[in-house]
Image (cartoon, rainbow, N blue to C red):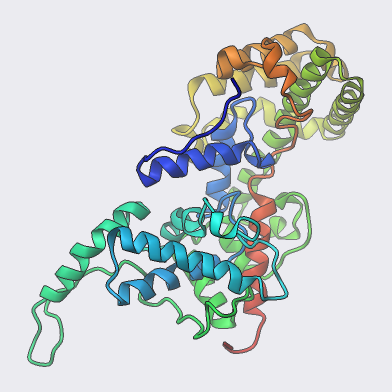
Length: 406
């Protein structure tokens, strides 16, 4: 019997998690074959808070609250709010498709069949930037609104018709107003006022983040990794050191990802893939040697890496052990160029996959191996940079525009 995903009537947050699982098989940056995702995600959120690998454009940070605030004004709640909000998010797809810049439209292909709505993608980020003030899930928000409207109506007022008590808003009251024709025509280009607002939100909530420094500096160049940006050399020393930790970890653990894929290629007898990953492993070893002194010093001082506050509580003990074992093989194993033939290195990778996947481990399950696409997590960690740089570029472009236009 062939396997398939089927939808059941879970709560909305369970449904979102299932969609996240499915997306893991589609998004290269999120595939965590060797179980180092906790380290990757901790760095990513620390440097670029409120972002994710499935976000596409900055103006969604405004589209979503605009949609919900409009529906709040109509006193919609519960199941009807869920239905109306979804309908508006689909209308937004069609409005965006009328613009010249259609890159990053969520739902451009699926449209009415869209499962992962933009509000799901940006919900956490909206709270991180305190654009969304309601602290719960989308489902909780939809259900809370009936009580919210009732409380709002019951507020005691003075003779001047001013409320005597304060009811906390669900959305930032300083949110810029939406265009009048949002559902007829929409675009990703931020007005200057909108860009200033998003910049201010990041600076208010995450002033010491890498994201904040990029938005203040106005500097952004095309690069595969954020540590290649000229801005890095101007950062506070402590942040530069954290960037160096991320860069060195990304560089070093990349070899384990290549070796895993080489082992799969050899196990499946796919000669073209064997040659590919042998060449990539050679290139990795050569690039490691090119920075050997710096990397070796990092390894010898790796306690500083594990002591980073945002890593301390995030990384499971067995993940720390796996990384430590890999680092020891890399820096103390002797011939780095021959690590693909190192029995201890191969055993480490095999044991790690077995621990993570159990009976589904490709290196031990012929059926799982037969389904291998030829590439499983064979990428170097960039900590969301591919997606984040587009968010940054959108905001910087808006900051460079003239006064607000509709």
